[in-house]
Length: 493
Image: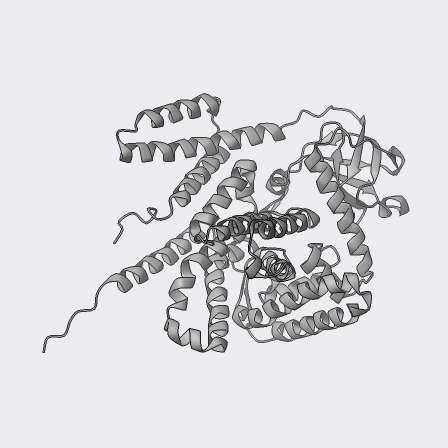
């Protein structure tokens, strides 16, 4: 039996060390630059090549220092000294407008500095008519982001994670639509803006303001602005909120659909993999590149690459590699709720699924396909719930007791909806069938939400309590592994 639990997953150890460095830099002010410290630690690690165990520790410390360095640089990039008075600037709208009690809120990107701002315009007919990609010429004062916090939700942290460096409130006579040049934007930003405009046009094609159309928009294009609070509560109480937030489930369904359309596994060549991956990343840009979808896209890209060599595909190492890539690109993602829930859910599935699937003999599952599908659904649901339940209780104060029954309803329905959505775009007359299926789903979930004890509310565990819960879950997992590896005593006759 291996003594080091990280021995078979070396990238997980590096990912954990990187996270430790990010957390340390977030809560501890380091008065000096981390760059020379990181370089010195790398040099020392390289000189320890004759001492493998000591070098392993040195490499781990290098990743801790790297996490602190990346976090330090990210924090510095978000610190902007905005002018005290009003300034004139040009910007482009990069989100759909959201109606507030007194204002219309939109996200804007300054064309000069490429800084993202939260912009609040006085509510009138002009601000209501703003669309994705509209150019604006504004005169206003830009302020630093708010320090507002409610419960476990830190709004300032949310703005930092998503790259916002300021906010502005604009009177109706101090802005106007204008043709602005996008040549100063990076190619990545122009590509994102193009896909966001395409997404806005696709959303307008649904043309409905009912609950069914709102669910379709959320499940296919990641737009939840039309969802009513009552409908959100129904999905939250029944434990079905994960189908409204785009994640690996949705991208996996789309990956399967693209695989079928491109000829299936018998044509699994480099060109097939390339076209599939390009299609996946086009969809990622289309839905606005949320962290959970980017995570799934990176993992699927690695999956497609490894499939060419018939190597191990989905593993904890693959997940750790994805975490390393995303955190090096944006270390603040570690504090994003979507990042945390997405990674812990997949990690829990990868760890617990083999144990849960081994409850039935492999031969039995091979010969009983219905039992295999049902038990696989149970295993995935239970494994994912063990991972995300403490976080859901911490951030949202709730635990859904009927999550298992809900998943047997929403997962097949979500698959059907995502497969029908492209058909509706090509044949609009099929929209009636799609909306009927979604309406039926809403009715079923509303019925489940009325069951007694459908949800345990007002759960408010502290961060320490959540950590202790995860320690208990890990201890139970290790105990099961030890019991499985311990040979049963022989009977003496």
